[in-house]
Length: 298
Image (cartoon, rainbow, N blue to C red; front, side, top):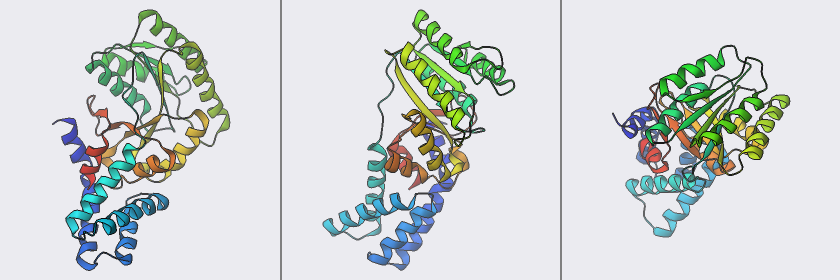
């Protein structure tokens, strides 16, 4: 099964949830204020934030009134186009090389596993990869990453448990520069977004990459568990303030029936999804495609 087939399969819960509610809406309401209020409620029930749902419905309503078309297929098509627009307005270009990708996030979202999948992805694109074990606090974190590195057949730079994470990054960057490696992927310790000292540590790691490897394309990506829902927006806001995020990696898309928070992140924080994961296997992660995602849920 190809990745986009997996995406459509993974988002089936969200699609079924939205489709059944839209069918019910069209069966009882003609286009009008009540219709648009209920459409807004449907989007909110799928974890689109209130302000984003309001913005999307306002755009749908304006276009529908301007073009004077009222049938169900047209309105769904219009909604689909506007949701694609919301995502594409914050899209980033594919990374250029050399590239450093630092993954950040709270505990338990799948950062270490994502490092392995990203390494596999870039290898499949013909790139050379080094991974950096900058999670030096969690017991056996570097050993777990070493297993993924071995599975993906990439180099790993690691220090002893308890070492300074910034020192690991310094060595990984120096090694990548010397060997002309295309991509460095950094695993960082999970941290609660309310702990300021941990956020300061992230800022220090950020500075090391910026100072030591200014010629690299540096992407700071927040790894989010797709089942988190609206709380993902709060997480993203705090991490963005700490390190100025470039985008997101979504994991566990196959486990949610509410994928709407993706639109809130794009519309409110201008944070695009860069990579999306739809399963446990090595090749279950790809570059995110806005149009495919919207077609998969609507």
